Length: 323
Figure 1 (cartoon, rainbow, N blue to C red):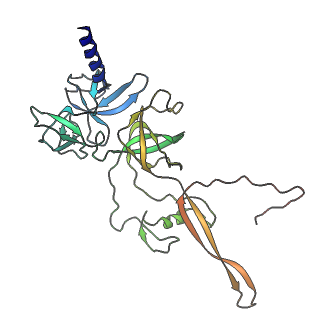
Figure 2 (figure 1 turned 90 degrees about the vertical axis):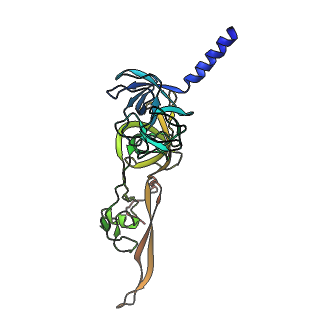
Figure 3 (figure 1 turned 135 degrees about the vertical axis):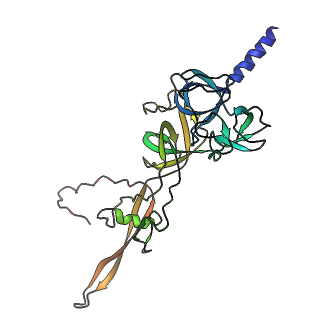
């Protein structure tokens, strides 16, 4: 009898690993097995806050078997295995996902991420996660914030909606490539013309136009193993799911979230490396030959310009200028 009690206790503890605690900030009651969206995480209390789904990219889970009143605490279920959830429609094998202003998942979801694993009954179905918590691609969009150090950055979760320029719109004249008029952001050499008083030797990096997602205001931390720094305020794509950071991680960063996402791709700093062209030219009148600068080819590449400290003149020497 004692041995059986111990086995049951161990099973109960293992089952608890499939749940997480949350506070319902939606303003209305969450039904049993209703779809919920994560808003934030407080490491001190180990508590997530949730809202009613809006159908946009994010982290989605399902409530447990007990309804949770507005402002009260409940337990959500993790996607370590199939879970019961509310569905508005669909049949075995159909892909469903969160929709706006609903506790149910539906086949009309724009992000999908889950498949029905049985024959739905009474508005409930067994669900398998096929995406990364609310997106079949298993990725999440973020806007990069300040650098924390060692590859970690503060960031905010974002939603991305394509804003494709109209055909023929947003044109700029070609730059160093001599390629003529092209749509904005297609010719990186054209961006060199946007640098005020650009001269060969200027290491200022052009800001090549790229679409930027809209911030949700939900904070997180991202980690990028790539050795070059990400551009702040720019778009990055991270892998799902996020990993809760342990106590002490991100110390002093001021981050308000306990989830860390690994960067898959981002916008990195670039530099311009100039290559001047010189030729021996003959004056048509005097016949004098001089070496003249006849052009410059600039290479745009990922990197950071690290300026060497100036070397002072040797003892006894004076003067200025450049060689």
